[in-house]
Image (cartoon, rainbow, N blue to C red; front, side):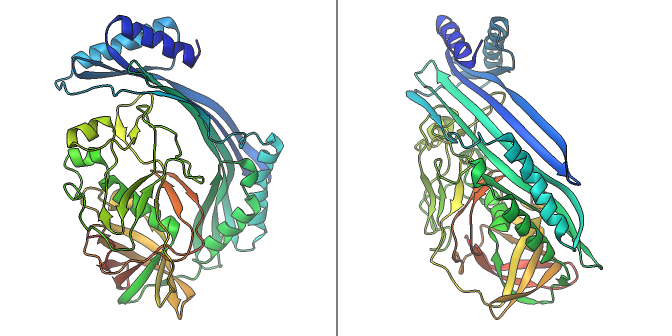
Amino acid sequence: MTFEEAKTYLLEKATKQKIEAEILATETRELSLKAFEGKLEDITSAVMGGIGVRVETGGKIGYASSEERSSEALDWMLQEAIENASLQTTSDGFIPPGTALGRQDLPDEGLSGDLEQKRAMPLEVEKIIRQDKRTDQVDSTQYSEFDSEVLVASTKGSSGGYRTGAAYVGGNVIMTDGKVKKSGWEYKAKREVNKLEPGQTALELIEKTARHLGAKPLKTGKYRAYFEPQAFMGLMRVFGEMLSAQNVLEGQSKLANRLGEKIGSDFVTFIDDPMHPEGLGSQPFDAEGVKSQRLVLVEKGILKSYIHNSYTAKKLGMKNTAHASRYYNSVLNVDFSNLFLEPGSGIGMKDGIIITDLSGLHAGANSISGEFSVQALGLKVEGGESVHAVENFAIAGGVARATTKYRRTRGEARVARFAWQSLGRSSGIVVCWCLKGSSQNSVVSSQHGFFY
């Protein structure tokens, strides 16, 4: 049966058994085209997804899911969820009330481009990269897209669906100046295939990789640092997890009990916008069928809100912010849609370091404490201009340290969809930070952070 038919079947079954139930179904179509040495090396097309149910009986919550949609599979799934609920030791769960939400197509016809046009994109990226004499190896170039359908419904009145998706183009390269080699990657994503620019993406990949050739160790000293948007988004992930109400409830956020407090400079404003025009994480409603809305999390340095689902909001006595997140086969949590740092009026660059790349964030950043110590690459700035690349240094600090200086330079906001999606444009550097540094794989520690 179809997802709509399965939804109706499950809700009728749950109603007859006098239990509350919530249905979440997802189906994603993926297309991947990889080029190598002037030919399409790998063409992959796949459809994946399933249907999941969350039930509440006596305040106990149970989950189950299935990739099959036969009546036998759905009957088993519902009973499995009921049995799983009976095993729970807590009885404060509930299914939130909902409304009719309708259906929306977010990408519209943006992914319906001609297949030959899509096949040509990774080939064009590879061709342009190989034309540069400094290219040592092209690991891969790729076009990919995803097109997802999401359906939510419950016995409490929630009912709606939406379609979302995006297309990507980019690649990975190794370049050399004859002495050393540097690797780099660049991928661009858009809601519409026709807005992708494979030629421009290839040129940006070349420029961003080649600029690190001839890098020198960072000498001992005190530096002002400027984060490029792509590098700064890694730190946004760490800070974002500190804004999770789930983490607050579990005692895993240093921002617990700090609503209304000054935690950053006046230049810091974080916003999550579920319908951002450039956002890959856009969604008209969350995984519980609650209508999404723009949320200011930090405004001019003041902590305004955490992100909530219905359960965390009730437990903390706060408003539900419609950030419920789960896949059809997972349990309820919270997550952002499109988180971004609001652009500032701009500042000029002085002598310092442009941080272009961070590595090791998965191991070197602690989202509970906000502390991090990660390897970095950068560009030395003298007289307001980049003069040469720098390497063999790390940055260490914390997003919860005393702030005295933070500014957003010129440029548009870049949207971060955790943990891997990122979109938007930025024509300028994202943030400045005063650092101390020393040579020989030195640690560069924060003198002035951007939160306290």
